[in-house]
Amino acid sequence: MKPKSKILIIAGSDSSGGAGLQADIKTVTSLGSYALTAITAVTIQNTTGVKSVIPISPVDLKNQIIYSAKDIRPDAIKIGMLHSKNVIKKVLESLKILNIKKVILDPVMIAKGGAKLIDEDAIRILKKELIKKVYLITPNIPEAEVLTGIKINNKEDMILAAYELLNCGAKNVLIKGGHLKSKKVIDIFLNKTDFKIFVSPRHKTRNTHGTGCTLSSAITTFFSCGKNIKKACDLGIKYVNSAILTNPNYGKGNGPINHLNSMKLNKIFK
Image (cartoon, rainbow, N blue to C red):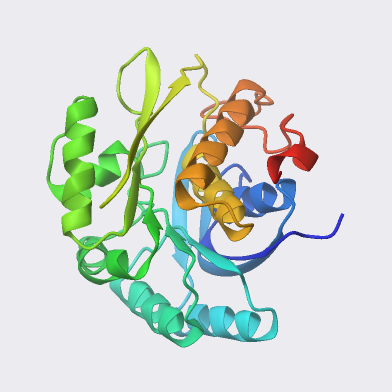
């Protein structure tokens, strides 16, 4: 099968294979596209938590992005873990050079096990500058709370936070509601002209490591293949739900989901 599009992934590596760059590559490949990568950091982790984070120099990160993309120009870019202000600055410089419109930002801040993956200076520049340069931002509830200063306890708070992110310059927002204690999982999509609440079943499992990375990469892939951004979010959410439901039950902690889940690839893009 020939790849349907090319995706550049800018993200941190996860040695356990369930999240980060590894989850991104698996997702993009499983959905029929080609993945290029630029590594922001190497993490030493497993399903029980993060042991350490080894940053890649910002200059080397920029060189990865530009050198790869000038040879194989991506149709879209997915951005994940950006751990420092200088890393974000180099990503901003790279985006300006490449001038690619389809850019999805997953503002990774806290690992599933609770480890913080970004510093305060990085959060400030992400909110002030990077949000305005991407097409969609996909924070989970803790990340949305950090970015907006709004405490999120329910669906109405999610909507309020989504509007606040629009006020910060975001073009499209998808706030992921998996952290809410509710019977169903609610995700909120919002832009200046459209609004959608996605409702999904909640699966009782500890194996949800990498769901955020996987979702943003799935959305990027569908979007790069011609779906509009709301439909790409819908299809991405369905893909992740199926991946959670069919998880392989690996590891002693928060295990990975199943990127090779049962969705029919030949039907996805019709």
